Length: 246
Image 1 (tube, rainbow, N blue to C red):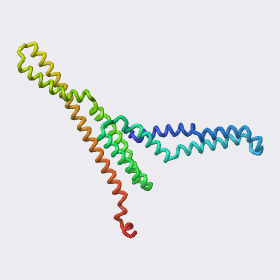
Image 2: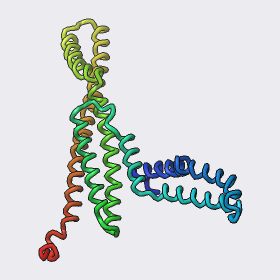
Image 3: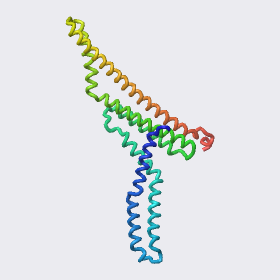
Image 4: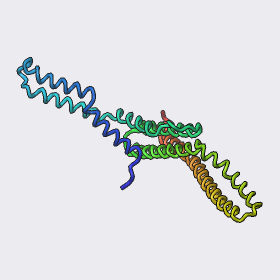
């Protein structure tokens, strides 16, 4: 079974929220209240209508309110956008360059979504919408990468160790070359090996963070490419005979 996309998971949350809000909102509460009141007093005021008709009217009105809430596409899109921005926000990311990259990526996402929304219903629009869903995954992965890079870059202990550990290694090597006591040399050798392992781990971590930063640049460029290609699809009519006649 294929893994759900980021947008699919958000849409599921939106669906649950809409279903809950459809029954627990102001119009629904007013309809229920009006139904109870009408059932109590309207049979006396309008005797030609049987009392059981008023609950039926109320049920029909409540059903209409629920249906309107669940089929409000514009409202659903707003909720999807709100939940996505809330979950994958820039809050907590302190590195200015990382924030700028994520802002550019989100601008591409919004513009890509706008291009899809302008397309007429059909196979092309459905295919473009599938691409848009994948873009949400890209943005989610970019935010996750950026948070890890930001944690690394702002970790004072890692920065300190990257500076101090190479110096400690050189200092130990210098002392080891001059030390004559066998037991001291043995301890120095053990300590030197530990420091070298620590430095190797630090350099591997640094390399991974550098590759992650390059991956952000690659994803950003890919988003720009997708946006440009979508604009090309929409501009095909510009070169057509119909456009020339106009």
